[in-house]
Image (cartoon, rainbow, N blue to C red):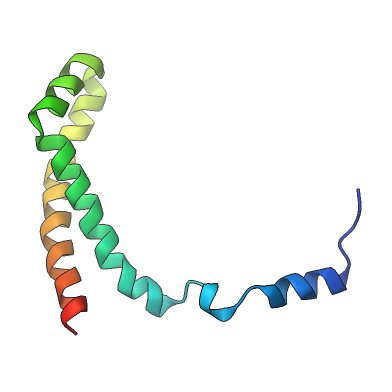
Length: 91
């Protein structure tokens, strides 16, 4: 197995540009949209009649109960993430 020399490490380190690194400012802008997307997906999946019927027939009872417990969290993330995302777009 070939060892990586210090010159290889330095060139690799220099290859990563500053704009490719996830800075806290970028994460702060993206996080509300991630929360909103989670809420939208969870709300859609848990409230869609076809998907609910499919889950009733194919999933074990314990997993169904766990998913139903996430309904409130999904709605909360949808509402708060939506307002939070709009606030970030407005500012």
